[in-house]
Length: 481
Image (tube, rainbow, N blue to C red; front, side):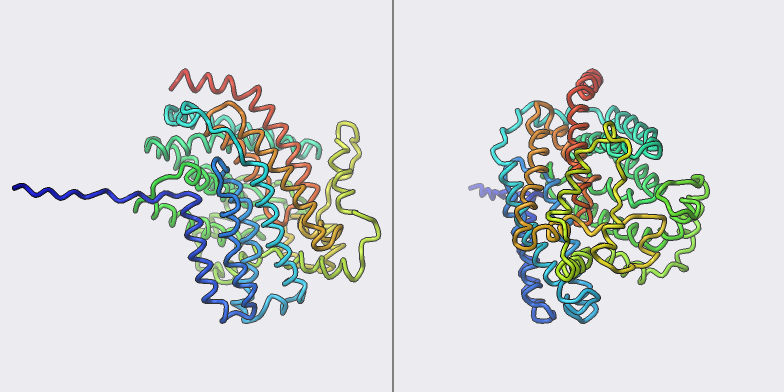
């Protein structure tokens, strides 16, 4: 008698919304355990459960991964402030801006839930892509996609100087520059799906890190975000190698972020020629020499102070809390002032109104925060904003601010829906929505005017590119695949 033992292969674990929901539920339980050790136990519990709730609300078929990124990044900005309070042995209300920071936390969590609900309303009921559209990226050649990335990256680099000629060209230039993220997503999807072309993936990562450090802002991190979004969109099966890879990506992002925080003040001074501007005026050699000098002398960097500064830079609800206090002590005399200014700025195109004043987020910041945050944060002429959550509170208070927050969610959600309903390959759809959201929306710190203007203009520009530029590109890819 032959005895046969059958072993049923275990079900693979996929990196998807379902896994994240389980992981965030475990995180929520851990935060419940930690809550008694915190000065803000209820805040700690709610902070722990919010990511799970956000994923629960948007976990819907064909929901783009970039929506989760958008919501979670703003949650991180609030949660980091709670972490800092825990590390300092104080409550949220014990800081510089007092109890209003605790209120800012609650209003932020409520706003995130409202945004998640509006995204679900906008992005449910999408027709599934055909099998050809769903699997077309598997037939693409990584080398051709790498050439496409090089072309879009070169275009982005070539047109960037146009922003110094006219402020009205800034948003169109940003929109065209985001095309490289479409190419990135297409290549990353192909490589992660087929396992071929890893060398091209690594080449893009190195190029983006190098070019990201050559500018004034921390653009080096975006390539890692796009890579993680591609992996989440594909629902890749988790194995030991890609788990280690994910951990490595996180460590690299954190390490580069701390390094940039440590050197950015000196670097920006050199890059701008010690001027109060946001324009690069020094040579690439001078800029790179600053970074290289710091990199080869890591012992001279105060890593602990830089890490603390990075976390405090991420934690953005302090300024929201400050704006709450100021707006209640000295209410804005103009009804709906922030929305009026934002809509007026968006409606007055520079083609028709060439004398339109440039947006000055810093002026608005000092009007409502009334604090000098120091030259270190504003080095290199960088601007700082109170953010769209604070602006909505100034106009409508709470809970009235939730209504315009929902309107903003609808504007962004239906912009994403347009690209997700185009009859193109699935990876192209996801690439365009990633290009719209990732480089443009920086979280709570984005001003209301930039949110509205950026969403509308960049969506229009990307829609035109998808309509008229992508078809010949698609034919070129198909001929070589």
